[in-house]
Length: 182
Image (cartoon, rainbow, N blue to C red):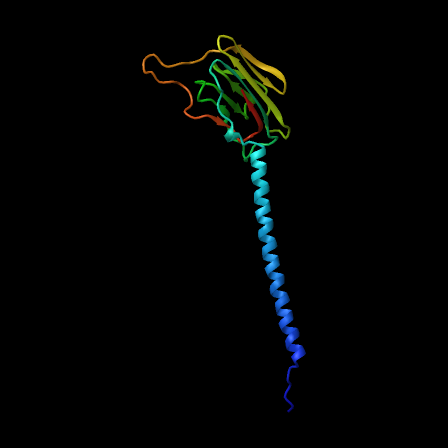
């Protein structure tokens, strides 16, 4: 039986082929890593350009202020909660925006105002505006229409205990897409 001997051309071809495969995989790995780095940079830029709701502070004063927010068309989880806290102020005791989706009620302000027949998270984006002025009025708007209005009363410290009624921390729901607070 004759012995088959590989020619040097075949050996060189196999070595060249192996080198090409190694280079190809090395470049593919570097390309994937570069894409991941670029995607991370892009996400960081997006986060810096559009401040998250967590970066927005509480009302600047208890003398007066306004809140404007556009809600996402759909609630962020299913099924929707029975009570949805949209906003809670730590600076203005008792001030909150609370939505009862199964009753179509939006509660806002201090003292609380009730707006009936308010439908949020129905596939359409809705705008909520709330403003208050100490020794004046408070207003609640839904999609540009005033749905509740009353005198604003700032709740202070309880005379018996010295404790403030209200929330300990400021909160804005992740249901909001765009928020402005003054």
